[in-house]
Amino acid sequence: MKVLKVLENAEVIIADLEVNLGDKTRSSPTLCVRYEGSIIPLNTPDGLPILMNSENAIKIL
Image (cartoon, rainbow, N blue to C red; front, side, top):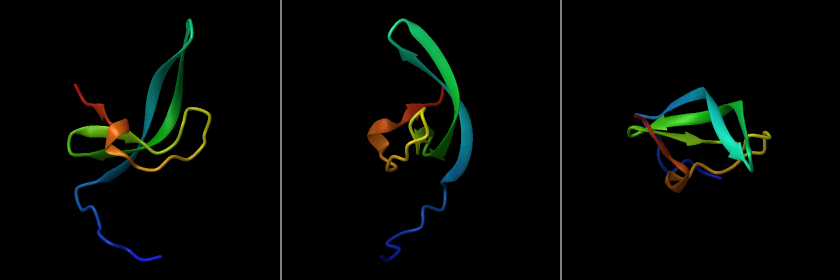
């Protein structure tokens, strides 16, 4: 494994994200990265890790 690039303007945060699960709404503290004006989750609401992917980004209002 090797480091290809360090994202200097990325910040690791914990965000309280709200998700709709059918007819219920739930929130959960989620490990995320704040990058280029968006929040990108690094794990699912149940704690499973996911790869940082800009397609998963949530725009900050």
